[in-house]
Image 1 (cartoon, rainbow, N blue to C red):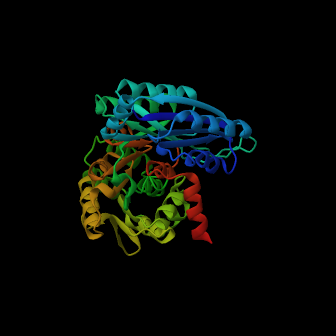
Image 2 (image 1 turned 45 degrees about the vertical axis):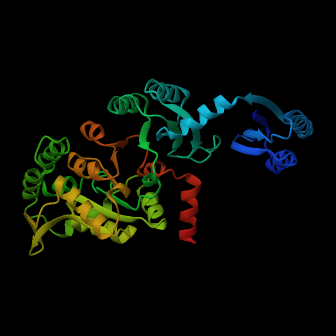
Image 3 (image 1 turned 135 degrees about the vertical axis):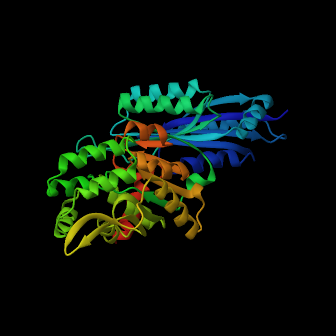
Length: 411
């Protein structure tokens, strides 16, 4: 009979403990079948699953380890594991794995209780929990805090649509965002990110800002809202709105561009993605004039948007060329991916409006950002409670990793 033993070690963390523990076990030639460690506020929790050699007995091995641990001020617990239990545990590794990402300004026990209830209710088991956000000072709290935990879960949901709907309800009720992705190779090798521009990269609808200066603000804003809710055909609504800009001086475009606010986290997100080698595209139902300025500022690779027609220094109220609408965004996303030799499974799309749904649908990871309810329901993932750099958490990146990348770039 094999002797399989789970060793659980706890106590104050310090350098050299793992080397010391393994040194004690190495003398007896044990095999390490599994190992896991976590440290919270300098408090260590380490689990080691070992197989004792057939020619050895566990008693002297554990006695020596217990004596060593006592001298180190550590607590030990030994649990025998039967061969049947071990083989059952091995057999579970074939089950699908998913990643649940929980993010918000803060995360409370009530948030996690509600989230965990949904996970358990859908037949999933939590294997591992990792904090992706950085440590936060209570003495000097950040102006715009963010917290993120990543859960590795095992199993297949009983009803994935119902599970996503439950997560959306929690997002609305509790002020957190919950992402749910299959844990596969593509999650870790995304290469192309396509962004909507207005109300995604920038905190404004440019056409509304232009309309205010043209004296048609209320008319255009009403049409914009209806279009974003999916109540109007985008192309027809755009032409109607642009027609109300007839006679506006071209110089106004420059004035508006100078005052457009970037979305929280947008610059950090794009600079981090660029430093990691991602290709970045803007696919917008807005206007190329403003997209190109963002391209110059942030080093964006592709810009596809709508071209305002200008004659004699004034807007004619018309557009040049084809309109970039919802289906157009999806088509452009596919074209860029093909040109860059990138699988659609490696593409991320981020947007807020109904006309973004087609590209969110074809991308491997589609994220609705501070979007209308119809868009959140139609997208695979949603961010509604933190800045745009929350996208980095969906890639499994920790704050310290993104900060290191930025520091290296700025150096």
